[in-house]
Length: 251
Image (cartoon, rainbow, N blue to C red):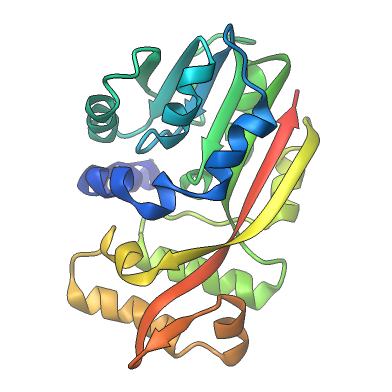
């Protein structure tokens, strides 16, 4: 599938950047995971689209085993090398929409800042439901779009221009439809500030491409600049903020 090949290309090129990324390696959501999930020492965890392995790394000390999966082989190899001291993390190449596990295997499934790359989110959610044990927990975190149509259109245009493997940041209302088979126990939405230079350099090398993305923010309407908290200095974007949704569900 074309979208999945694009994901492999982007993440192969940027494998180290996703390990060191301040957006991915830090955040209040990582600190909240243990409190929300209440992991136990006999639990099996599946981390879907692990990327730089930040979720697996944070949960590793509290559970029996974590299976960290990713579509991109080189990304997974790089993360495996980086986390080799965490001996209860097992790395497996896997498609989020076609998981290589039998039904009702895991006590916890996590997926953080990845699902906007998935072409068929409803298939992904069906797979999560399938591999979770009865009463299992699913912790989902991703960038989301506003319910406002123009803001939704802008953030997805911006993300696609900066990263051609981006499929769509969905609205929370859309995700709740995908999650109808789950019980939502807890949720939180927050503004996530992105340092512009680090964010744009993670996927784009060409200076003109970077400038084109920056101009989308610089020339946006006042409403859009206010909503996304665009901060500039000497007509250069320093940072902006997007919406992120964290939700805990049970099967």
